[in-house]
Image (cartoon, rainbow, N blue to C red; front, side):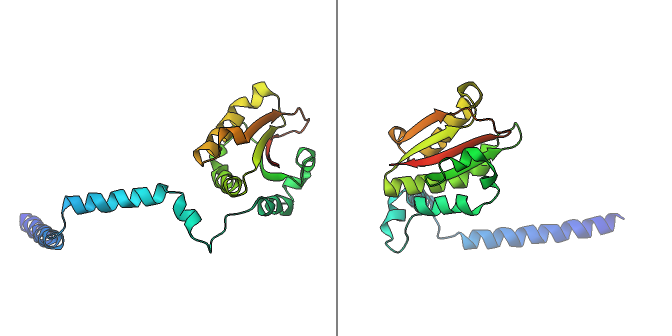
Amino acid sequence: MYLNYFKTLNYLNGILYITTIFIISACNDINIDRINKNFSELVDWSFNDNNFQANKDVTPISSKTLNAFIAIDQEYMKFDFLLDDKKNIIGAFVFIDVNHELHNYHNSLMLIARAQKSEKFKIKIVSNKNENKSSFLLDKIQEMLMIEGVSKENIKKEYVEHNDKFFIIKLLKVS
């Protein structure tokens, strides 16, 4: 029994020894300064918004495209609150449960922010519930848009009482 244990241990030591030699020889000419420089360049590149704008072949999404996304989705067209401004709507969030999981809409907010930055329009965030029930969520949406680069001056919040069963927030393009 012990003989089998020692054979396994000897085998694992051999693998560890070979792996260590391989790693040391592979990293022989790499120094920490070069790694830090490459990492800092990657961070600068990823947070630099000019890289997105520099490529002339890539055009940001437009508000018309965002509006078309909403018009295509028949699920959203069931709500009268969304049909009021259907030509200017660029985003719609319907919350069926009380959790209000806004992180599910992060990609939509990012696209809206890109369109706003390229077209320079104002955004109106409208809730179908009163301010007491929805101000926290509208503030969170405003914060997420500001993180994506939309100026606070370009965002307006509005509360319109509507008798829909669900909690609905729509984002409108305002010229």
